[in-house]
Image 1 (spheres, helix red, strand yellow):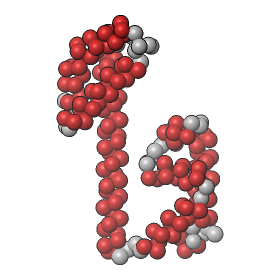
Image 2: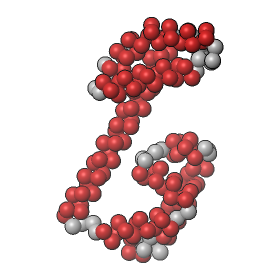
Image 3: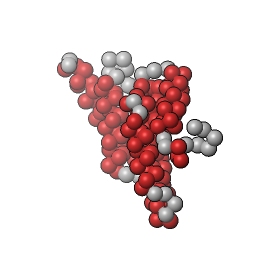
Image 4: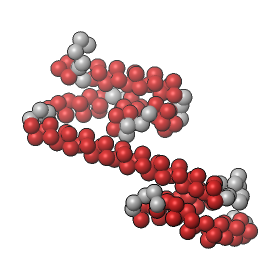
Length: 169
């Protein structure tokens, strides 16, 4: 690590941190999350300092905007998961779902190969798009689509007959 690079980064941090933090705070309600995002902006600036040696405030705010978008998406997924859990609890309280069904689904997942189980969990639990799944699995989107199709078929075959979609055996 060169001393000049470190000094340059510290000067950048000192000059722009208040503006970056202010930008993030105006868009994020949690002070703690805003601090974390601002810190991430400067972590990324440090990591990219070889390719972007003197980032402008515009570059830093663009990084912040992208990180804020990630935070919003993450928050939205968390809210959707909580809603699904509440729906599940309501169904369970009404007696519409039974432990036997949940156990059968869990058992079917356990029967799958690890890579089939992983792509199903990325799709349905993590709620990722095919493009995001392809990135996670380090493959092309078309490959992820084929893998997901095959995993769905494997899962369907692993389910007890009573839980399979109608008309399929």
